[in-house]
Length: 125
Image 1 (cartoon, rainbow, N blue to C red):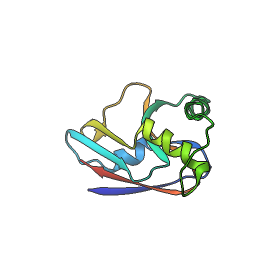
Image 2: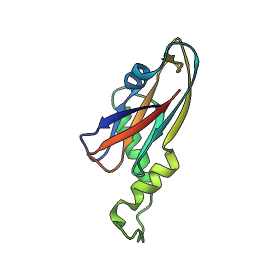
Image 3: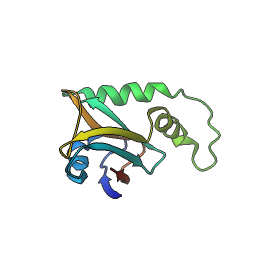
Image 4: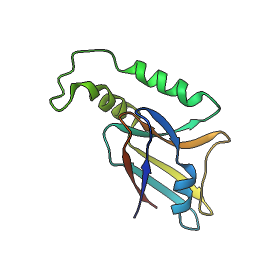
């Protein structure tokens, strides 16, 4: 089991972590499991053409409605918890010869929803 830490720099951002994950994969073939140990960020795959990250963030923001949230710690970031739960905090991906098997435009991304922060990801292959 390995860990990587990704330092985000903005309150909301999409960060390509594909190369970071590939560096941690063993030679050979298998499945890697990624677990983001946070409740106000998410993991997914995405196309990262210019501007797509901002489109993604706008769409994600629209998912969580403006409500009177009851989150006792900080109601202002309750939508961030909801968005993280909807998108997810884990991925299972195949790899071959020590590299992720992804579609032509797919990249593995961390979506920061309440940063900037250091985000820890466990990698098990």
